[in-house]
Length: 116
Image (cartoon, rainbow, N blue to C red; front, side, top):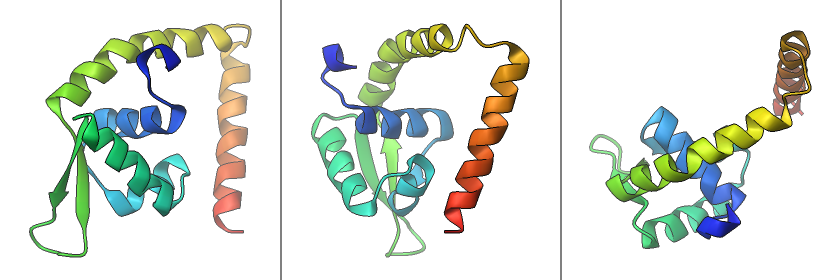
């Protein structure tokens, strides 16, 4: 990611928008575990680079959506395959059963932490 001048949080926002479509800016932080103040800063930086745009909700003035732009889409399509390959390589020593167990355990901790 460093070679593309993007940090982990910016990548996480772009990846979320790429895979899930436009999202209310207020909910992005919950999905990638970043504070609301940080999300605003990250979206500002990505917007300056032309990778995302803010869209006002037509039915609720309190809500603003964030959407990936064509430039952001092209950018993430360039870097995501490398990221995906690296993640696959990192977890290659684990069997499918071990990967499934790890996913279940991480989800369990995540659901528990929401209730703290």
